[in-house]
Length: 65
Image 1 (cartoon, rainbow, N blue to C red):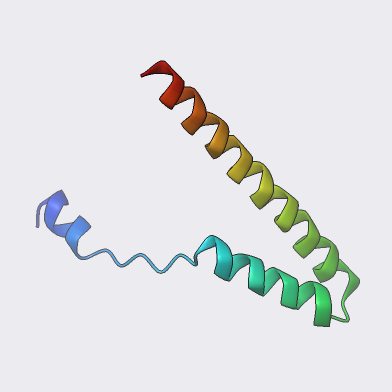
Image 2 (image 1 turned 45 degrees about the vertical axis):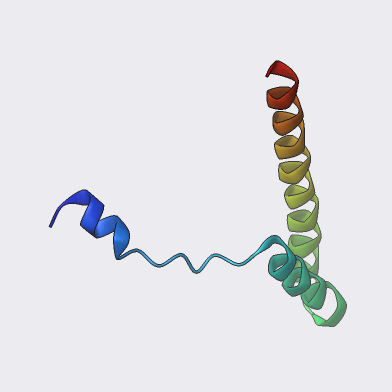
């Protein structure tokens, strides 16, 4: 089996940004475990940083065209 054939068989089940945010908000809202709530809050901030960086990269790319 070639690498291309292997790639075609790969299934991407990654959640969307929206789906991830909703899951994290549920943890923050409903979890009784403090460590889980703190982790979820950290993940929300980390996701925001990633989105900000992607927007910055897109803006820089568009300005260079």
